[in-house]
Length: 281
Image (tube, rainbow, N blue to C red; front, side, top):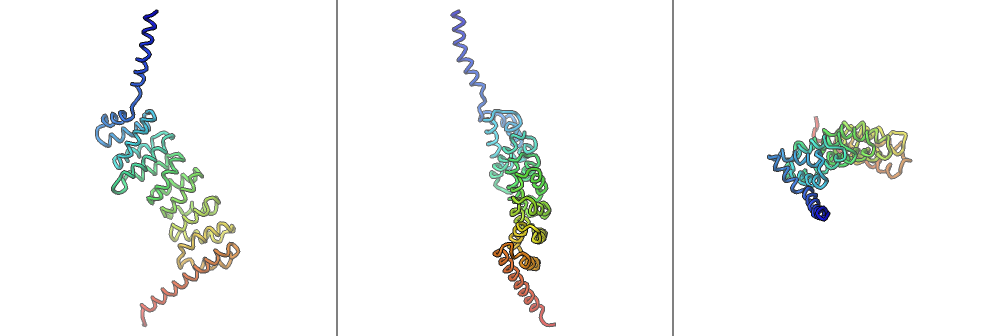
């Protein structure tokens, strides 16, 4: 009986020591993964798997993420793969790591960076999209227009950042979605009008069309966004708005009239200069 009790009390510390020894040290786990992988591209893939695919403890996952971020350009291909393959619970983490990795790049934009963010939108969760879409807008990623629109249509909570990004990108392919947003959801109205003003002539044409809307709020959003970018092609539309919709908002109508007169003076000045340059015939 004494022998059994003695063994039991001796065995408890031994078991506790073994349990502590079996706990994975994050730094050691990351270094072992890198050493086993070999070259840097394989190291990045090993860290990506450790962070999101292999079911590692959270402390190890976070340490692997941190290490992968400092790989910069050399980790982009692995992060691109993670944007597609990581479980939904980790999609936002992947995008966060992509953004962090981009800050470690000293040269231009790595070739994999924008496609990885784009797939973060195609395959991502709401949180991942809310992180990726503004960066795609900031980078003016024309290739991302369709995924951004698709994400906004699928999830209305993504729509505000999507509309702003589409305006920054400035691709006319977004004009139909933005036009529907202008005349549809009131929460997107002002943002959509501003975004249309950033699309050039095709966006301005849709704003001029919206200035004839039966809804006052749509008309006001459209004309206010047109004013800063109006050209001589828009003078007639400005005069018509001021004549027909003065009751919308007196201050706005005054600004519209002033803008139309200013543009007319510019037209007259340009025509006079052209006439003088051509000389008598």
